[in-house]
Length: 303
Ligand SMILES: Nc1ncnc2c1ncn2[C@@H]1O[C@H](COP(=O)(O)OP(=O)(O)OP(=O)(O)O)[C@@H](O)[C@H]1O
Ligand SMILES: [Mg+2]
Image (cartoon, rainbow, N blue to C red; front, top):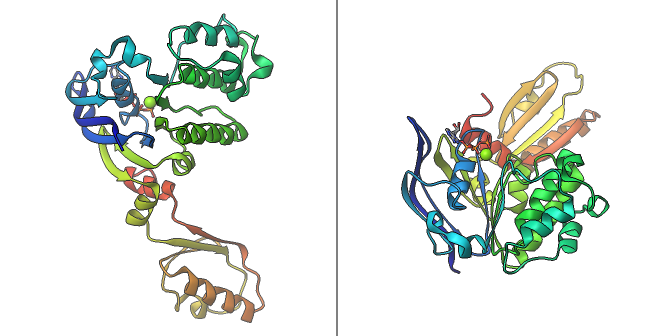
């Protein structure tokens, strides 16, 4: 598979501060690549350099085989962009905005198809300025797809979407991927990255602190499964419940959490104990370590 994006030693400084501090990565054609990281980590700066909207201070960047800072029209024709905060004309209607921006592209998706894709049929003739925040964001998303691009940059595309709209936009992105499009996505929603991304890079203070598939990050940083339940009122000691467990036991008020790499045997012990004591374990949950747990470990967000 060919490489869509190649970044080597990328640096971007603003005065004394290094917003991007020497990062390298590549994105293959047809891949969904997610960039995660806290506010100010350098995600938008990186993405905007790849789009040709900012010049790097140092390093090498190749996007579709082109240096984006010298990209020109033929480069822009092949990429689609959803900026973190787009400044589109609020006086125009949804249909007018899509017609207007679409005219700049050599191959383009029909306006009606775009309106349907982002579910704005009922708002097509309304002025953009009168739309709700989430609806305006859908216009931004439609604009990113207007030129039927082969490479799409989505900088926090689903911020402000209601949960149903977010799920449906995931289907849209999955669909674009199945058509062979390459997608670079930033998001603060870890479930979004988990659901969509083939690979993720976690940025922190301008550096990549982890990179890989969501599954590989989970297995290299997480340690398995968390079993949790509300402790029922029992007479006497809990040592016959807790001592045989292989996992690490944590308690918070009446909630017990066991972090374990042998969930099957620990769970068997716990449920056997509860049944023998004729107790129901309230809100019993078994959950694998998810990308959010890994992310918080990496960026220190839970301190
Ligand atoms: N034009 C600019 N001038 C000066 N500093 C800037 C400029 N743009 C970004 N920065 C700084 O660079 C750093 C990275 O910003 P960036 O927008 O890339 O972060 P981000 O990861 O996209 O954050 P967020 O999750 O909040 O969108 C921040 O400290 C920001 O203040
Ligand atoms: Mg940003």
